[in-house]
Length: 149
Image (cartoon, rainbow, N blue to C red; front, side):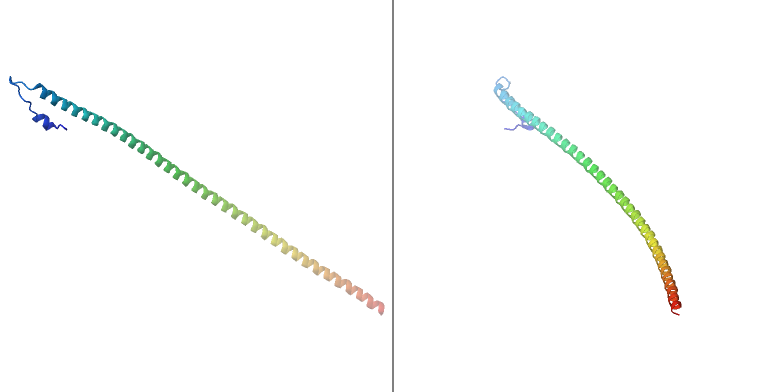
């Protein structure tokens, strides 16, 4: 039976003949109050322990959340750094490729100019050779015609 504060306030004990209270009624009531108080103390203690466990669990969760947030921020920072480094590296690779391309173009332009010069020299040499052969042939022809006459 649950005892409420109103039960305690309204509790009346049977009087004995000489104006006293029945000791058995008082003892029974005190026993019920003691049992109820013991139950309440036990429940209160269990609830306090449960609240402490819950508080500890909440603190653990909060600490885990904090650690996860720090890990996420750290991962984002590392990801941003990696992206930045990759962009820098890509820019460097492109710059190097452009320099190599410019060097190759300059070398090919130089080679083209050299080949054109060699072609001109060869054409001039061919012309000189043709002229020399014609001149030689003309002189032989003249010699042949002079010797026939």
